[in-house]
Image (tube, rainbow, N blue to C red; front, top):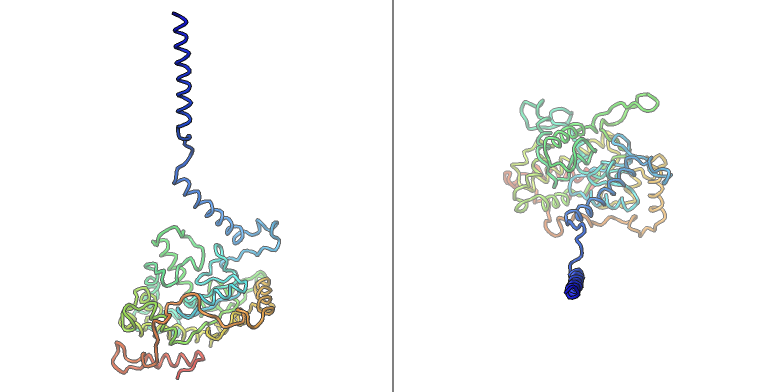
Length: 405
């Protein structure tokens, strides 16, 4: 009857309700937005975007936040003067010097002078910036070539050789000079090749040429170089030539001192110093002639008054280098940097790291691997008893203030 029917309906309804509650209790929670790719992208991109915004404000447009930081440092653009450039051959300890100068409170870049995205506004320590003082093949005085005829096309050819492919193990990239037209997200292609060729053509030998600059008073003032980025002081960092050659052999030789040279080193050495055919040399010869030519070019520039001073990396403390660089002078480029250096170097005891000889903690390619003596520079792939390289390195050693016995 009707009463039985209603009882069945009520019972069924209660049963369905219990079943729904049971299902709801055991069902997994509703899926929210859990796309793993979205989460990973957010975790990576948000800090990256914030860091780039930080660099943009502090390095490129500090005036936008000057109300928060009244003493914030002004932007340093590509044409603005920095205090210090140190040039020294590969394996002379440039990375160590850069790190130790940073500990004095300075913004120093190693193989980097690009100030719109890097805190390198006080200066740069670099081997490749030494190209400023190397004569352009077939164009500048003192340039030597083994090219018989055709010197007028030699320089563009050498530039193209340097820029054809990126050689990151050589510590060179166009971005180390300026933030140009290419993105670092781009692989090495036509854009970076063009940028590289523009920069290399501008920088090569620019320290050997003077130019006139028009300043705020609209008067022409002669500058001692024709380089895009000026430095107040230029120092030549040297290391004992034999020790430098040892490190180069450990870093770039394939199969020991008589073995082959890594192609990247050959590209740069042949381009910069075409008076030698490095491709036909043993590794010890290639390293030796490179060390001689590079250092000799900087020594000549110093004799012309284009490089201010020289220091031996084995005998220099960070504070001594900072003093030679003019960071302690009243006319230094940025006075707060001067104050930081004076505070560290004058207030600390003579036993502090800033006043102690530097110890190698950076690149240590040659830890116990290669040890050379003067007789190792004789012969090699050349005829037995050939002493040209030995004579050159001994002469260079004396010119750099070391004992050559």
